[in-house]
Each structure stands twice: as structure tokens, then as C-alpha cells.
Length: 558
Image (tube, rainbow, N blue to C red):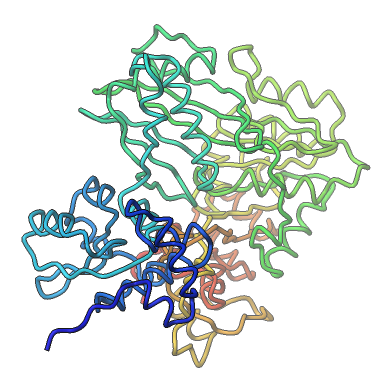
């Protein structure tokens, strides 16, 4: 027997969501041009979700809440983006040669026919709120730059300067909203690919027509005061931008590629807040040791890690921690990422002859108590920083190495004599940034370790320090939602290892011992690797071992 299809208005009335009088007013107002449901939403009488659930009941179709069930990437990949956007639909899941498609309007037979022709599969329609579908399309296919940004008004063309201005302003604003630290503008054969780095991971955001590339690159070069005519050599520059009420320092690097000039924009928020050492992710055990080291009146303390591991942020937090107003603090940086009160900050400017060695040599004549060196990248900077530490200043510097013991050997490779390293260095902090599980969608595992110590040793190869207070086991897994761009991760925290330079470590440095011997002695004296630090954070439900392995190159431990 065929089911009797009820009108959506009757369903809403029977459910007590609207009165019969309100329904009649909406019918009269629609005048045949709009759906009654749309009018009721506009009047604020019902929500999009209530309309979608009513449509689900009216047509006996499943309702899908896209806040809880996200489109599977394999399903979304089956139909082209333009089809999803034009018909306001999104494939959600695929099973047994059937594609489940969430639609705002399940009566749109033209849309269903278009999907069937595209996929050659059985198509099962489902109902979802239109706003959720639009959000899911953006997450699945990337950002669609508004038509008015790309096209502009009458008389505008791809070569128009105004077009480049609008596109750049739009990208900067959207990148800030998405918490991006970098914008990558990458030319290909027929499009320009736009990608953002968010929480250390690159995400494809959108593609733009190739024809807009010259204007966009020209606009960036005008802002950075670089040579617009030079397209064969790399160039670097910077400009300041006010975006969404925030002041950004934007560092731009250009380099020619096969399909045109590529540009990478680093976004630095001038007014971002400096976090405390604890807020950076330093647990009590590590923080106590590090604070003891930086409280010493002199010596060289190195903060090591690869590019993008948060070294400069840690040093900024350290200067805030040390800044009591009783000491003169001077920094030399490239670039200055944080504006710090009562810290004399020097911006490196190689074009004007102010590089790290020149600036460091000069600032020693200004009676500093604490010196922060943005990066030790050459033998001369390494030598001057070491002598400054021996002369009575506390020198904090970053250096690119994979772990704490290797940082000491890097100084030796730069030509600093072993006896000077042993005398000047007081400690090394090495770190990485791991993504935090999204607090909105992470799922705690039903079974937790019975013996947390044994679990940490199994996954990291080490035991935590004696007396370390372990968190209550809350091992969790990523799920993915709109807030975390389906990744399951939102935000980052640090994992650390700290190596105090003890007398036995000094002896090994003087002997020119290899990294493994220094690391073995450090562990014998209580140092724990950042892998253990990461495992403890995994135990507490903050991140995952997959994420710790990703940033530490841990390998295939069980």
C-alpha cells in the first residue's frame, strides 16, 4: 500500500512547532515564489534543522546531522565540486554500490539525475539542513572565493589592480579566521593553488584562475617594496596589514617556478599574547629544571629543534619569566615575532649591514645582563655568543638540531672549541609541537591502561622520571568535525626534553664524545626524552602517539 505523503506545514503544526494561523500567514506570504519552510525560517518560527527533520518525515527519508556525521572523503570525491555547490548537496557515505547523498531539497529530481549520471551508482537521498551542507561542502572541497571578489564590478578584469587587492585582502582575512600561520600561493599549469599551514599541517584551501597570478604577485611586491620587474631571482620582503582588527607583520618570500612566481606569506600577529612556560606545555618536572637553568646569572642556554617547532615562542616566554625590571635584556632577532615590554629588541637587517654577528658584537658594549639570540646559524655568531656567556651574560639562543645532546656537537661543528662549550653551556632544551586532539569531537577509548608506567615504557622505550605525577589515563582518538577541519586536531602544545650540563657531561664534551654517549649519560642522570613527555600527554588524552611519532620520527615502536 502506498504511503500517504503529508504536507510539511501539517507536519510542523502537528509537532506543535507552528500554529495553523502562522502556517496560513507563511503560505500567503510565499505567494508561490518561495517554499513555505523557507518563509517560516525567515520569520524565526522554526529552525533549518526542524524543517529538515520535517522534510525527512514527509518523504520518509533518513535525516543526517552533518555536525555528527561528516562526509567520507571517498564519497565526496565521487562527484565534482561544482555539482555539489550548484545543487546544495554532499555525498556522505558509500556502501554496496550505493551513494548516500545529503540534500537540502530532496524533491530536486534534476539534482538527483545529475548525481546518478556522474557516479553511475544507486543514489540514496537523505535530508540535512542547508547551512550544514554548505559547511560540509567547504570542508570537503575547499574554500570558494566569493564571485564578487574574483569578478568585481563592471570594467574589472584579471589584469585590474583592484582585483588583486580584493583577492589578497580576502585571503588574509580568511587565513586569520582559520588560524593559519602561512599562506602558500603556488602556480600550476592552469590554476593557482592556495594552501594554508594550520597547526603545522598544510591544507589545500582553493584554486584560482592562472590569469590572476601576475596581478597578485605584483600587488605583493608593491606592498613589500621589491622590484616588480625582477621575475628571475628570489626576493624577500615584508609589509604590515590590519586584518580583522589585528595588526599583522607579513613576511613574503618569492621564487620563480616553471609556471610563474611562487609566494609564501608568513603571518605574525604583532599583538598576540606571550604564553607562560606552563601554558606552552611544560610539565612540572621539565619546567622546574629549565627555570633553575635560566635563573643562573650567566651561561649559554640553547633551545633546539627544527624550523616551526616553537623555539622563538619558548624564548619569548622565557624572557617574560625573567623580566623583573632589575636586569637589562637585549634581543637580536630575525624576525621580531613578539613585542616584549622592557626588552630592547633588535631586528636583523642584512641589507643595511646589520646581521647577527654585527649586532651581537655591538650590543655587548651596552652592558646587557641577558641576551637573546634569535638563531645561531654561523660560526661567528656561535663564537661571540659563547664568549658573551663566559664574560658574565646569560645568553639564550636557538639552534637547529633534532635533540638536546646534538646541539652541543653543532657548536663544535661550527668551530667553537670543546673547552669553551664545556665552560659556557649550562643547559639545552629541545622541543617539538604536537597537535592537540580536538576537544569538541575527540572520543575517549573504552579501555584504558591498567598500568600507566608499563604503557609509557612500551610506547616510548623509556620510563618517566622518578616522582613524576602521571595523569589519570584518558587515551583518546581523533574523530573530526567542522571546528577542526575534519582533522580531529585543534591547536598545538609543546613536548620537551631538558639537558642540564653537569660535570660528567662537561667531561664528555671535553673528550669530544659522540652524541649517543652524551645522551646515554644524560638519561642515566635523569633526563627524559621528549618522546616520554609526549607519551605522558597521550596518556592524559591531549594528543596521540601517531602525532608524537610524526614530529619526533620515533619509528615503529609497539
